[in-house]
Length: 267
Image 1 (cartoon, rainbow, N blue to C red):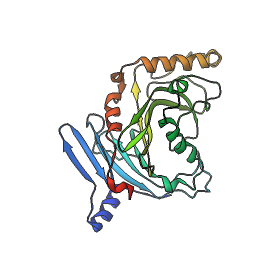
Image 2: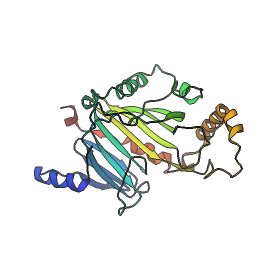
Image 3: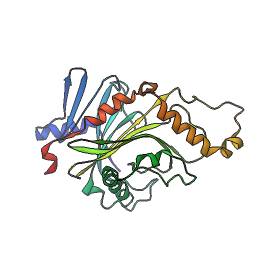
Image 4: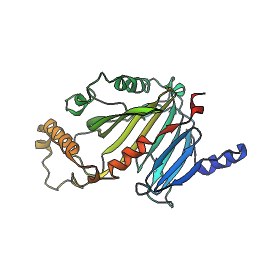
């Protein structure tokens, strides 16, 4: 496993006479890297750092399974912070679909995007609870070594160069109440030529849920009413306004809608 941070990437690109382009357009920052670009409101995050990952050995026994090669764009809260993980703040991971073929755990997620984009699948079914948490799981890469226990605010995004699904979710390895800092808002989709898989993941904060559990919390009573709790949580998340989350969900939706692949991406 080998990560090469942006400093190394810039040095290599200088040798080729190519640099990632970052441009200011009104209040939005547009970040272009190769054939892929996106725009974001600087109120969301402070900086973007690009990372290349060469891929795990497909046979490696790792939590969630081995991961395919990707380019990752990690957001930070300020320009002086070095991003460590997609799940610390948020970011965008770009996989070339042909590179994922040896990673069998990824294929069902990629195929599911095309099924969802067909319009023949009712999205409402994913916003319900079931004791088998995987029954209504939506596509999510990278593979998580935990259960996708709820989904809320599920919607399709269908653009000229990319299409997919956005939703709010939480993952669990054990049963416990949600806190306001553990929800993820994600876009999972494909370029329209099916050559690239795009995974954008952002960690949210919200006051809709407590910051911590009370000292006298009754776990036994909670477990007994777990499915009702999940249903109530989904209703709460669906009824909330975008500005009740940080980052604001409208800003993240605009970021997702800005994903663009140049014509060269099809070659």
